Image (tube, rainbow, N blue to C red; front, side):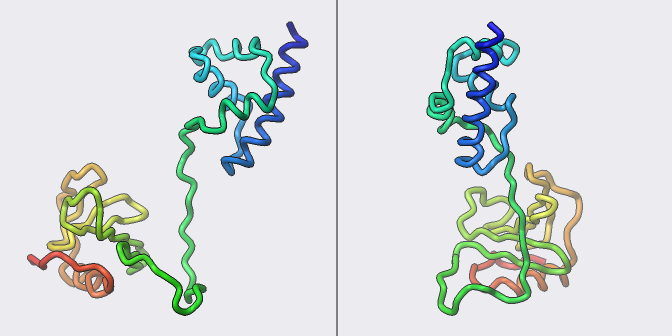
Length: 171
């Protein structure tokens, strides 16, 4: 039995290298074991039963290559002083990112959620939404925050929007 477990460990470690490369993520042994348990219908507590399937690294990879590992969003925003895109490069016209007073706001022309205004701005750091018609702030779950930004700041932000039509100002 221990030789079967040792062989399983070796095969999972080989498969882990393939999966790390495919997903650009550093998996741990337990990530693979739990994903295999899910595939075979075992509970997490019974995940050690996956060792009894005599899987090769290639078979593990085949089983898990399309698995939803629910990886966290690992993104980073990098701000450059000047654009590095070549002149005439295509740019998105349905989204605009505004950097103002150290904050980053993103406006989607075709946001699937038209609340609180259509369009509205999303704060990259806090997840708050800004009503671009009156400056009201909402949390990510559409709950009013009990405050709004000043008219001066709202006008400043709105003045930086060049590509997207804004809602009528109501302040």
